[in-house]
Image (tube, rainbow over all chains, first blue to last red):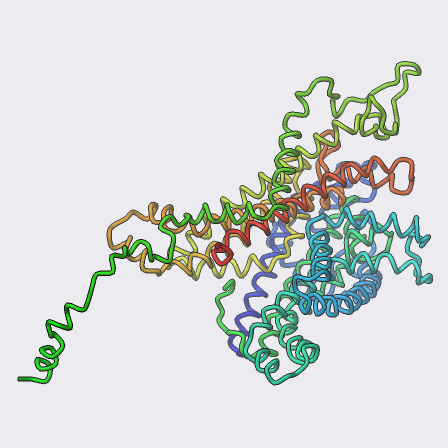
Length: 312
Length: 324
């Protein structure tokens, strides 16, 4: 087990290194306007001096290793066009808690809904409730979320008269974004939990329990759910890590000053060091989430084969 | 006389033998299985055709695709990028609600939304289908090598483990951020990640059938590798490939909408469902102008749900367990 985890860890680190390197080198290809808040007014000499000051004229490997060294010390450079000469980490420190607050409540809501829903659907397989639930899931998974979230926004603000734009002190403005964000999670967790529950149903221990006369409700809740939820645990760390990133779409839809909205803004302003920092953070959370998920699964369920060959 | 001989002798009593008669039955009458069993493909198509709803969706989609192709050649169609001016006032016909002239109305600068919507559907469908097909080609090629050539297995597995860790949203955003916006950029960005999953699916299927007897027999008989791949493997793989393609089309169309939202999508003079929705979104809070959002979202929803459901129905139909 230790060997597996070590291999898994090393692999993730290599991936992370590669991703950071690729992101870094690609962003060096960007136009240099993104480094100056007032590019149009500068002379050629000023630009040259500015670039030299920022160390952007050094060879790529030197720049990269300086960047990694700084990153390990918690320094991600300065924002240039988004907020002139503010430390990137300061901006992130402001934004991450907001996104996490939304993300965690979203996750909580999603689990709160998807566990009972998948139980109901699995125990009434093929009946009306399962069909309605499947329709709901199909719509959520097939239609681009950019489309149905607009619908929610329109209905929520028009018919239910909920204030649209986010306000930190007004809890009612949190409702729509949290509901919107949780839908994707609900679709994901319900689909898979239902599938795992139905798979469990065919196993011997369930048949034995039925023969013994245990009520089907009790079998479902006491025995099947526990087993079916094990493979889902793998996705939990990733979901939690994803809350740091926030939802790009929902956050800018409701003007929530979080990480997702930040990415949209810095892309529009072409703030290279901010885009770089956010994308690298994306990569780190994504990679670590999957890594922790695999390790957690391997700790919880010893039956999981510890072969290093992924993809089977 | 041994025990056996004695037994035979007793058994072969002529009187007893004559009591046996021919029953005059043919073996064909009693065969359980129908002699004319369907081929795999016939069975798949028959099972699929039984699903009426899926067949209906196939018809809807085919009609829709056909219409987006022939729409520009129909009589009296407007140019999607032309700005229309009113004859009386000489000003742009802004935000005109649907009329006889402008079936879907006009947008905020006086362009015809009917032709823009269909032109956008054309772009999005093209992107979706092209990206999925390219993904399928790359994914299948890599998957075949990965699954068939034993020496390459460890190498590809390692590569897969590395690439699979990279969140695909990042690749999408990064490529579209760095390159100039346009159809080629979007194609590249959307194709960059999907093939990995495809390759893995193909490889896993290959592992299941690689060492079956019929493959070993083919090899021993000296069949060329290409022929083995084509004749022995492809029938098993094609259903997976088709299913993945039809499921990846809606997600590609969704990604296009998303990337346009970030401001990294196609320029406005190439209408796509993504930038139509993006433009319509600005009108969300004006109830009188919501028609600008309604039509593109409706088309997107029809296309994506149809492809998604057809893909799932096809996956069910392609599973031999569901053949009867």
